[in-house]
Length: 180
Image: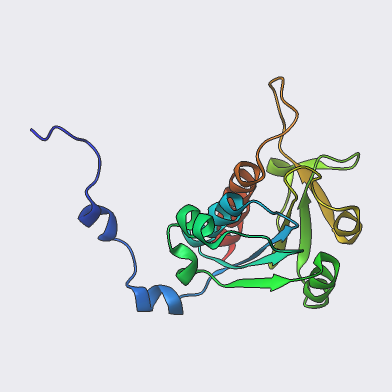
């Protein structure tokens, strides 16, 4: 009897597409917009999430002071499988996406925010995640179609941005994938 219950790398890869198949397969019509997210580890985590859920792309907005070494370590070289764009302006980026009929959801606890589990995500859509300290900018919130939040039941008021992004991204990508 084997001592481990875990799958081997070969067993995991068995149901994965080839590299060419992955690059050519349709992606989930979902874009992550990172509104002044500055931590290389967080951006790297988002790259891994984008690959894991096979989403359309990530747009990193704002001034970039990213450490390539930290980013590569956090993303585990999965950036080669993910479409990544950069923009100086979150608002310009969001306006362009709205003009292309994307629905914009900002992950931020606001007066009018809704539990992310109760949202009907429409395709194509954008999830906006904000700066580690300040959250989603007021300008981005103004452009959003809906503000969504993760209910918190403990004593803390917030989650790390990449943790919050993982929770909402998993739900949103699942809903959109089911609709494909």
